[in-house]
Image 1 (cartoon, helix red, strand yellow):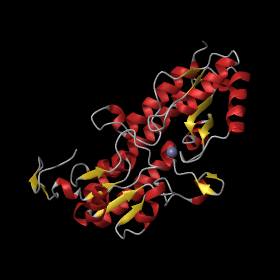
Image 2: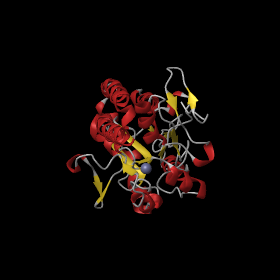
Image 3: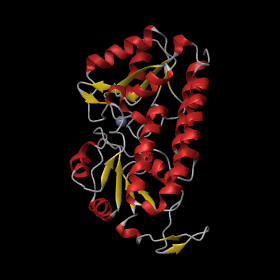
Length: 298
Ligand SMILES: [Zn+2]
């Protein structure tokens, strides 16, 4: 919920002071995923705004002047960290009231690629529960008057996410083991693969700024053709070129691989008014698409 009235009195009689829209909210998050955590902890007590909307690629996003103003005026800035917000990283590190919610996760639980930590930790629900703890702590520090309510809301969300983790496990278990191969536009799903037992292959690396080499492309095509992999997956925040190129090369080799009917959400949520605009809704959508495409013999 976004409260846009300055100094509005809301339902339960609490007084909420929120700044006028041009200056931004009291809590400003970079991605929709981080904003989802803050909104759930806030429960409407403090206004939360995400800078990056649906379909926006955080690896490449450049802060606009209006974003900078919002980040500077906010009481608390929450960002993913682990270099997800590639071009904004330095600016965020220099903001004294900014907290990187994924950087508290124990180092041994992180995955690395060429020495860099993989930032896509939300795809392992158990790791994202750790990020929820970081959001809760930062918000209790910044708004001590709401700490009790924040702790209660965070505990409720934690319970919901633990159930979501189990639900995902049960759904993916219905895919026969030999068909548990997830080929996506960029390498955002390695935590998902590790947590839920599915092999993942990304056309681009852990950042969309990485190029897919020709050799790498050829290796993936060989694999898809050899194992008759039925479908590969596009993402809402990444252009279709790479996925399209693999499909064309496979078709030329006589294997009719298809692009999954629905795109996966990787680094961005959808609009807040649809189910995929929330973290649990986004995860359920992805799991459903993956199960539908990989489970059936076609
Ligand atoms: Zn990514």
